[in-house]
Length: 183
Image: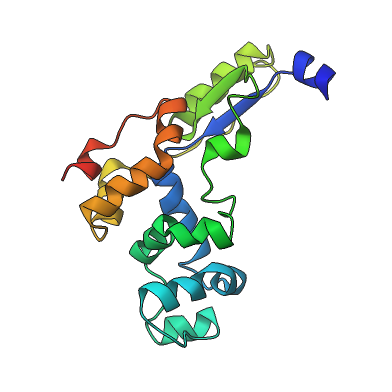
């Protein structure tokens, strides 16, 4: 392992922490996803939608209009009991806890928001730009979309969420989302 760490090129692609949370919610809680509902969503419905007996399945929750909302997801993330009893899932765990940038010296860190350009730069750095072509990408998340998702989240909760993911913003070079935190 030590030889690999010394000789291999280590790279990582990261995403804006708030965009990553939106993506996690959209992927794990908007479509019917029974495993995620049973592991996380049911707790959200119970605690933050005040349902002492939440629906047993995600399908039932959707039919009753009791599926977790994005704000319920934020409440779950901010709840001090959450990580005390169930560690954050890898889809919303802080990136610096997943990839340990302070312990591992990455040769290249790219951003998903500039994936096309960063991938091309990485291929040049690896000297394989003539052999490998990165497929075209489209970034569908805009600042307006982020504002739209966070409009249901009270400002104080947005600020607390920023504190929870603050080091991901700082370590990976994402700017503080003033338009979300100060409006």
